[in-house]
Length: 372
Image 1 (tube, one colour):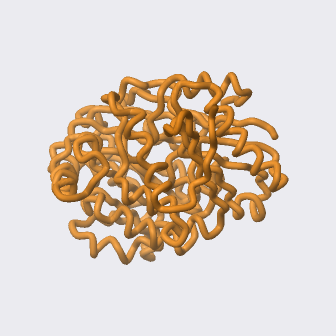
Image 2 (spheres, rainbow, N blue to C red; image 1 turned 30 degrees about the vertical axis):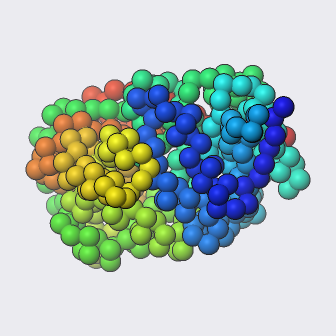
């Protein structure tokens, strides 16, 4: 018999967060989160995204052993302001037992029906900056700190339970040496002169912080047309600044400004922490922090996390300025491999950015939807 229990205390929350550690203990490809960070992400009062959301966390038990988990999420900005009647689900993990998946997703559906929502969709987080999508191809590639990993049977469970693919995401890999450097330089010179633009590159975190509010405002503008878009509030911005500032090399953030010092483009690249996160097993102390610091300085893989361009500058070659600046920084760091983190397959503007990199699609992922 399978029993469902809602998380309502710190002990249960830790059990919810750590369940995947046992589920994926033999996997070479799963990358664990930092336990304390993950607990904060799912805690009201710590993550401001929850101020505008209803969140229910459920654990499934079989013979007194945890066999599955799911987060049921209603983002009220999405539902009330954007008029999207979506019941979200995320943090979905289960053993290979269809009945466990069914009971977990049924519980999500019950909450959706009780709130007059029309469909469930997941796995998704609270917003675009959370992890999204279940892996459908590329199970033999190591994960990242910015993505969920899952067993192939998850997809079988979704389909058997009547969920259909809704949104598709692509992850690609290219080698740093394949970057069209000469083209960047040539286009960079033309674009800077034509539009009177300048690049902002930094070596210290304190130099970046004054520009972060403008960056989030630009993020909201540049991503607003995407089908998954939910705006990032001011409180969420402050939370994200504190959460990620220690993981970012200042040299790996680039801004582009116009002649009036208005930000018109930005890009964030992260060093890969995957191997280090596997080694620290979710714990920063006593030595985990040092391993992550070493990866931050010496990783030979870079993750292209976010690129945003003001809609007025789409198709004007602005990204050449960004990539020219990144080439300088990543060359100094000895980067060999670059990973493009998940982007919507229908984000054609983004696809155009990468067409000259000889990038290979290494993973595909999708969200899954079912009408209520």
